[in-house]
Length: 79
Image (cartoon, rainbow, N blue to C red; front, side, top):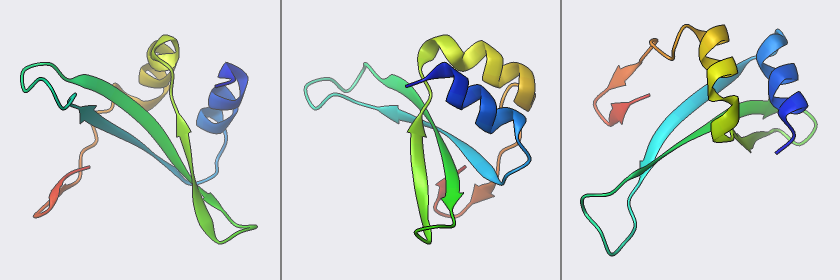
C-alpha cells in the first residue's frame, strides 16, 4: 500500500475508522498476527473502502490518533 495515501487519509478531514484486529493461523492457537485497516466512506459507490495499514506506517498513525486509545465497547466486541 502506498504510504502517501495512508498519510493523506489520516491528515484529511474525511470520516474514517481505524480497526485493529488479530489473525490466528488455523494451525496455531497461541500465535496471532495483529493487523490494522482503515475504513472510509466511498460516496461514489455507497460503500466502504478497506485499506490495509502496513506495519511501517503504524508509528505515523499512532502519532496522529493518540495511540489508538479511543475504543468503543459493544456487546458484540470492542472497536
